[in-house]
Length: 324
Image: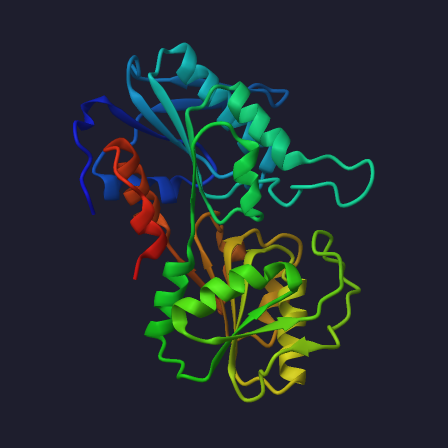
């Protein structure tokens, strides 16, 4: 990894969403995490005190907007406000998981575009840059008028898949038509064919009463199938996709998703599915109760650490998109 030049003026802060990942990033970068005190009033209001000087410093705040989503979002906004009032020179937000990104457009009348609202709040808070991984919709970058470094975890997953020696007869599967671009990028990296599950259920509201999709577009018979998605939430769509692939003759089936939201009964749903393994990253911290035998969690610490170093050194991050 490239080293940070002139690190004396750089500060890394971790909030409460994913302290383990923040610790790993700090070790990768070679800079210790700076200290801040986070407390709550009796009614739930959040209070943050920065415990060291940040005057004139370039600051990186590491925080995923994950469960509890609204608390973590408010922690981030309050922390940025505190840094700005403490005269930090630059405030860069490292948001491994961008919460509310699934609400990126008006799919129906009288709906909000909450992904844009989050962008407005961050810009109103006067952050200088956002570093994030695998946005649910890449166009969310366009909601910002500041630099957004949209990293991708594809290289982590493809390296893991290649290390497993799953053979040459692999098909990468999009769980619905909206996921075709992601599946195609993944397939290009491992030189595999693609297939699409003709899933017509509501992608945002994964209902318990969904049925197994009736059609799969593409050849999956006797192949090792890899279902690729950006988020695994309730796990229902991933499970039903695996069942559809089994129905059409697929061999072993693996699930891949960058962000393990794992809400509701996702752990049991995925554990009792036809998946061999569910491969995710650590953009979201998973407590013990969300760990299960089929889960494989890869770390994005090196990816984010390298991005921080390159941003600070004014180097291109283009190589991070084509890592082997």
